[in-house]
Image (cartoon, rainbow, N blue to C red; front, side, top):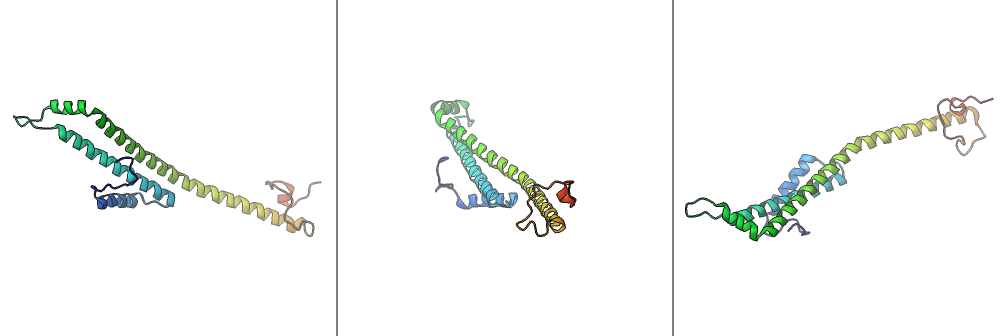
Length: 171
């Protein structure tokens, strides 16, 4: 059922689940392990949601018995709902839970993909900043700290316009 750790139940088609999983992996093309895990989670929740749809169909099919005139009456369906309302309510609750699981995984995947370029840009900016500070420090050492500053530059942080970055000494 919905709480089962087993994704594909014995009466379900394993190949059908694998086809769903493969289609999602191909369509969403996860780039990282975390993205792949989210796509896998989506596949599981989608599979469980489909299971609940099949159960709902089975629930209503049992209540739909044609009368003598060949038409399906609403009375047996209403009787079915009255006598098995708790079960039907559980089906709907599990269906909603599965839908929320899919939506949550989709949202996390979108956020992760949105953050990736920002993290790359932030990393590039941090590297540029670090490299520019190292260049300024090296230039300052070669201009005025020869022999005095053996362990690296002792002046930090370097800001544009300060005497250390420009090589001028303050008076």
